[in-house]
Image (cartoon, rainbow, N blue to C red; front, side, top):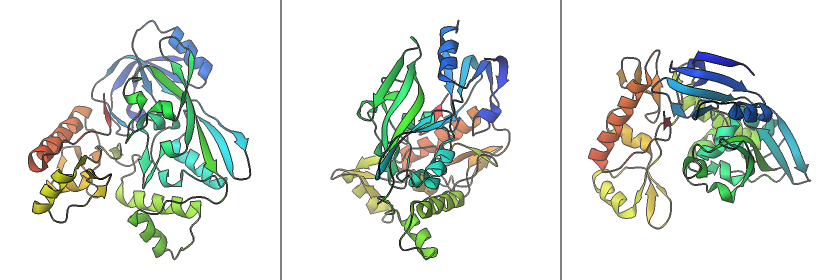
Length: 337
């Protein structure tokens, strides 16, 4: 187990922000993780996974543990379903493709989401009508203070929209080391209800799609809308889609009759944050090396050498404009560090 000092984190976060870690250890096993925690003389520790859902605004004056624990194991299998355990350091999209190749259904709509498996439950990642909570059985985690192993069932994770116990009462207390999913093996229940998926399948002449067809449609859609972090630094959707009351929505409709929406329940409506941002004129705007993507207003980007503070400043401008124009509080989906 090697300790590196003043380590640049530029290649460890998808925004490509060049900040440093006072100390850095790459963790390749659960035992290494427990050992690193027990030998840590500092009180603070920063857990770094795929670096895909964060904006680093400063150097980290602490120990950074990069979770790179690999491995996929089939725990249980029947004719109709399979339980698959995947370690936290596996790339999420690579894992989804592993499932597609083995005809394990349930995660195809979550194709091409950046990041590692270990951070997926924290965010309850979701896309195109599917969320991680729909297939996750449980996850294992290490208590940062004691080094003890702890299991969290789906229910114990208290999943919500881009939310979980790990962003609330358990925040900063545990490190997820593995996640177990229950996936279908036949008679897959496909979710193609989102118009973009339906259109992509129709354009290909596919009327009876497989999970691979759905995955490829999602990949095609995401590539057309979202920039590749390897080419332009970004963290995907920077803001959550706000949920507002029906009454508030009706008031907005009077001024903006074409405002898009998704009904949540009898009293609440979800409004696309990207649409709100676009209405305020931010789409495609650039300030130096930081800006808003030209194809998707929900994505903030680092064109070259922007600092985290510069990108944060843009996000705050957007939030202020949305509040003033629509009386909507726009919350970040990305974690600000």
